[in-house]
Image 1 (cartoon, chains in turn blue, yellow):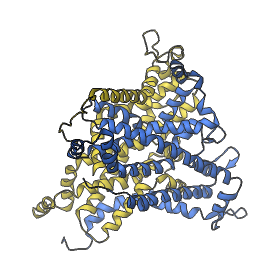
Image 2 (image 1 turned 90 degrees about the vertical axis):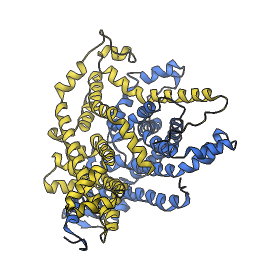
Image 3 (image 1 turned 90 degrees about the horizontal axis):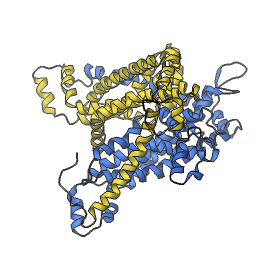
Image 4 (image 1 turned 135 degrees about the vertical axis):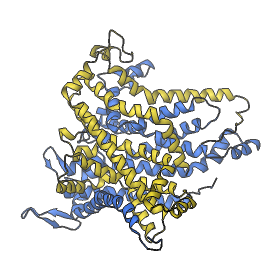
Length: 307
Length: 285
């Protein structure tokens, strides 16, 4: 076999299996879902027919769908904001501490902090449900211990607290990822750079904010977009702790659970694959907007320093 | 990894600053580990002891395995483990083998269209496969694969391939051309050369293996939709349904949680060093 052939057979052998499986079970279903969102079952003939944007109009205006869609959308944004504002500072703080050469047992701490990230949402959801349960009283006991017992409420059961509580549970689980990525970015900064600044009389805080932080700013972007995609596609945690109806009274409904209910139906409402595909396509557009914003706006604005 | 040049510790109150750091680190360690330890500990206690002294470790008086007995009597938990193991291992082997082949095709050769194929594969990194669920179910119904482990294996393979191909490509690019050219001159086939390249990127393969395995083992969505039947239930789905049914049987709930956690925890403790090194090294690249 000569090297000059434009596309020799061994390349087919190498590429084809991966391309086939990826195309058949990921690309095709995604495209087909988008296509399905433009179709609906004709009630008289029972056949699928092209309806243009009717499903989208229904999703955004019909009283059976629209209030739930907007409710889930807003909750998803809140869910994301909790992650953004809680996990980034804590992740950065832990990473900055772990990156100190003078500290001991750093390997142990790193292993411990990353551990919850390995567990499934089902396990994490149930563990916290038990801990926060007023029946077991572990959380209440703790608050009593530090004199804050009066603050205890059955958070997961109260509409105004359930979503923040679940967001924080999710942060608890996910924090290992931002921590690790920040940590990797911090230890990549050459010591000479820090030494030089210290010799020039810069304080610890000045070094952190003026030298280290700008160098890890690109990582903040990566962490944020990873979180965004993960959050707008989340389902397991809510389904496990609050069920498909995302109680109490839809207070924890996010797009993932809304998608599930629309597709499979619940209680009296029948499932509707075409509407399910429409919801999925909307989620796809939201995620795409976030990813494009990251690639086009953020990556152009943020300077990445070569070190 | 990090350089070992010693940094000068803060001039005056160095130990004080470290003390503060240790307080924060230990406090967060407790927050990260406490919930898991609490559940494991209480799963070995009698119902009475769970409620009267949740924070105490099991003693000979309070020790009880009644929860585990319920779990094994009422569910096929052992069977769920086998299912999860089959799905995870077969998906992982397919992802690594097919992914490595594709990555090598895209990084070891220059052919027309290689950039486009690379981009096409990379698209899947950012797009969650869940959004195609409506059609995936349709495809699986058409193929007669609903309620089989194959439906899960195929979906997870498709899900894991984009990142695997992307990461392995970066590492395979660093394999020196002289090496593969020399093998070619010695008469090695292209397949033999692939066999030579893979061991050279073994650390990357190991990292990718862990990162594709964890989401597969932990997934609830696809088992719930594609394979909810009793004979194909995975541990995650089995645990979720069992926990939902036995909410009020605290012994059983705590035992089921422990059983579902332990394999992952053991794996993690065994491999955490490599895993974390892989994660930090990958992030630097």
